[in-house]
Length: 268
Image (cartoon, rainbow, N blue to C red):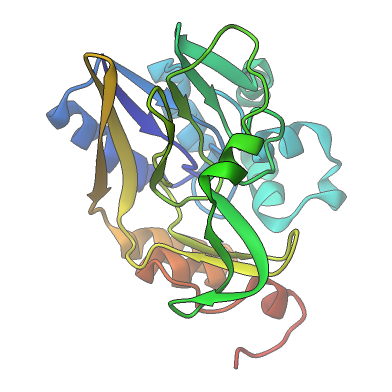
């Protein structure tokens, strides 16, 4: 069984098209979308329309939940931009997506963790932690990841697929259990203030996806980083008032911070 896992497209249609073409070249039995599909200052409606036509196994992420449940005035900028462009049919499609799914009898899919679409599974936000110039986040230990495993109704899983953090990673929890995050199709860096300030950076703007292949009783993984027209996506973010996204889309690193732009502060 060959599974192509994609996640966190965030309305980046050119990145999605490049990833879909790369998956076609690589070959896969199934493509699964792990959520956070449209939110962002890019192409939300066009991305939704493309995915609706593909009819992939898809789950909703925290941004889908926020789009569907929050009033426009309570939304963050990424959700508010998407909400302004989505059609009634596209919103109805998002509302029908499950929060988790079993792709196979032992392959479980969620966005964050089985318990929460906002919890990081394979990373831990740690105040004061700095590595490689990026503050606040480190790889989770196996014990931390096991504690976040919780219970998945349906049966034991040998492979658990998640997204949310945008960081491509796999973590081995034991001889028969692995967790895989394919990284983000659409956004390779961001800053966040919850639960503590931290920065996520993949260091290049390439769109990410991952291939999981069952070999006997084991899973084998390939991580892919795909080139596309990074600057076109960055210009779209700039046009829509999000130069912080533009910085991240061009480089895969955080430049300007969302909170600084919102407060009118100049970057240091």
